[in-house]
Amino acid sequence: MLENAETKILIAEDDEYLRKSVAKFIKQKGYETLEARNGEEALSLFRKNRPALILTDLRMPVMDGFDLLEEIVMESPKTPVIIFSGVGAKEDIINALRSGAWDYITKPIENIEFLMNRIERALMQAQMTYGYNETMENALRKANNALKKELEAKQRLEKMIIHAKREWERTVDSLTEQIALIDRRHCLVRVNKAMAAMLGKGPSEIVGRTCYLSTQGFSDQDAARRNMEALLAGVSQKGIFYDERLQAEFEVNMTPYLDVDEKTVVGGVYIARAVSDRRQG
Image (cartoon, rainbow, N blue to C red; front, side):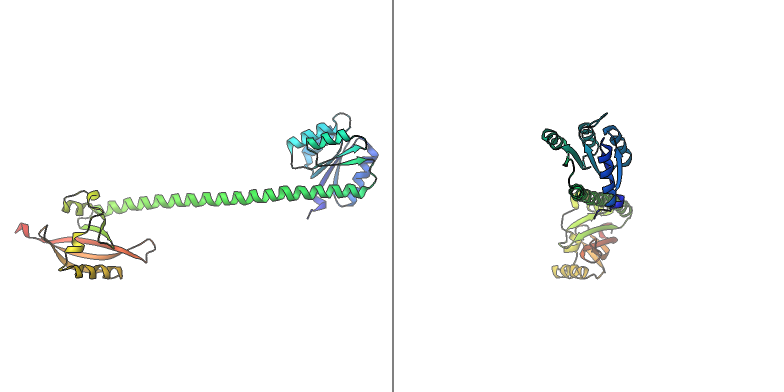
């Protein structure tokens, strides 16, 4: 719905009687009016007041309606312009409509209510067309802002994850215990420097291989399977295991390794410490 009291209509007409008669009628309908005697005055009033609609004669002194129409269309194409034109001036009407006028009224105005109908139709059309566009633009702007914030939050999270990973690596690598992270298939996912040094290989050579301690450090495969089942059930374990290849016994603490949801067990963390080395004997 249009709020008439807040809707300004600019009337540009050099015929004072016609201009004031139209202005009086429009005011009676609840609209605010602005009056100009020529296109130059109308353009000045338009720039100062930004009316919702312009009624203009085409033939006026100083600046005519065609020049005024050109300026309005260039500065504010969303503003409806309705032209006054003489009955026999069909060529003027056609040229004005091609130049951007929304509608026309022929003079003399025999039915003032018909004029009001044209005015309100143009105002409603402008509100529906550009109001919808503005609503869509605002919705799109909000969606873009939300997406931008989401991306920024994701980037911050990724940086935090990278930072946390580096801090984890620095912390774990500084420990003397041999530490390994294994998945549900007994494959090594990550090892610290102490574990890599004990195995005599670089971390990148070890990751992805089957954990010997996890699969062969037990008395049999059933024991290895039971160990993993216990870890997947969320039960921590501790034991002494012998590594034949290294000819050493290790005290091993095995803790379930949780996914990011902190609920799903995806593997185990093995922390080993040599308690004897038969090669030294």
